[in-house]
Image 1 (cartoon, rainbow, N blue to C red):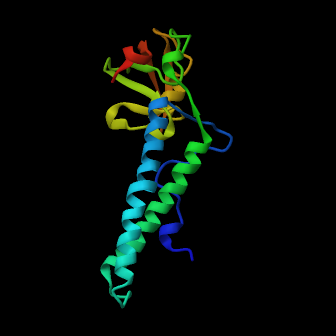
Image 2 (image 1 turned 90 degrees about the horizontal axis):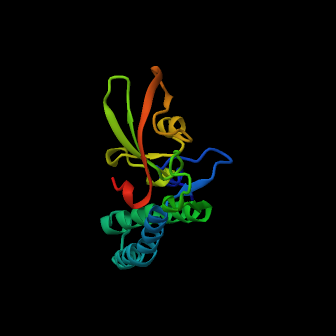
Image 3 (image 1 turned 90 degrees about the vertical axis):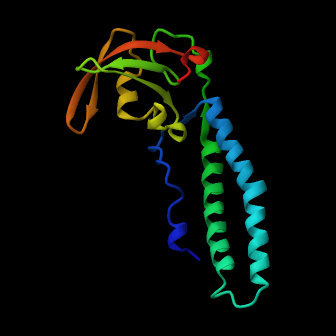
Length: 179
């Protein structure tokens, strides 16, 4: 039976058709660990609660049963999502990048906008993006503009308000790039 909870796989962004799911080794490890935790810890606990609640009689007004079944659907949906993402993942280790004078996946880039304000972002996989931590998806407008640029290059970021010129100030990879 399909319920409204089952309609969407997850809140994470869909990958455009034909686009690879690039991910750093650390991001891949986090996805695997989340999947392991859900399958081996969370799901068994919820199944135990639902089984116990089901044995308590009337299920229509049994909050533990109703909430447990809902939580079980959420966990199963997340497990399906993580399994698909992990299967489609292509792990790229930024520390192994040979062209360190150019921006590629995994680079930590400091850039300046037209007002001279500097920002630093790390280009990561879709599943690792976290703007508050300065981690942007490699398919985001800022990353697309920066990819393949060198220090000193001025590139144009496409924004809803139009193009914005930014200058690449610094490029770092691997251990040097901690953000």
